[in-house]
Length: 179
Image 1 (tube, rainbow, N blue to C red):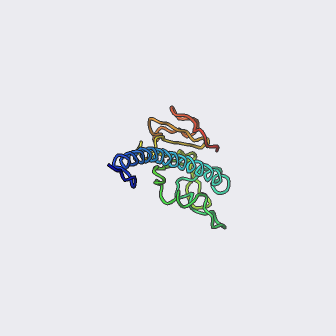
Image 2 (spheres, rainbow, N blue to C red):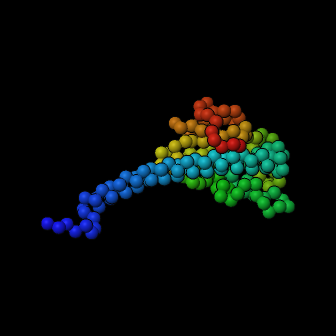
Image 3 (cartoon, rainbow, N blue to C red):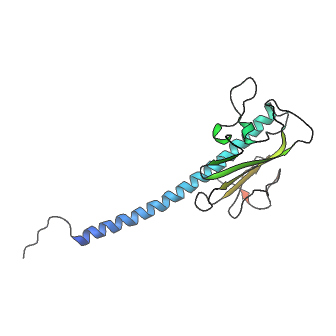
C-alpha cells in the first residue's frame, strides 16, 4: 500500500485549528486588558486636563474662583477664541468619554461675583470619573478636587464622597501618571 504524501491529514488540520484558537483567546484577553488600561488612562488624563483648566480659569477669569461647570470651561475668555478646556470635555455638565462618566460638582461662592465669561464662580469643585459599566469599561473609579491630585478606588465611586480639598475617606493617589 502506497501512501500519497500530498496535503494534510484531518488530525493535522484539527491540531493547527486548536493552536490558532488558543492563540486567539490569549490575544483577545490581552486586547480587553489593553482597552481597560486605555480607558482608565483617558479618564485620568481628562481629570488632569480639568484641573489645569480650572487653575487657568481661576487665575485669568474667575477672580481667584473656579468655573461653576464643565460647560463654563468651554467658553473662551473675552478677547480670545480659545476655551479653557477642549470641546470633548465641555459639551455638557456630565460627559461620557472612553467608557467613563465624568461629572463635576461645585460649591458656589457666598458673595455674588461674576467672572469674565458671565458665570457665577465656585469656591471649590470636585470631579469624578466612573466606569459606565464597572468591570467592562473600567475597573477603577477616579476623583479629584481643588488640590489637583487624582485619586483612585477599586471598590466604589467618589460621587458624593469627594471633599472640597484633601484626600477622600478611602482610595489612594493614582500611580503611573505624572500630574
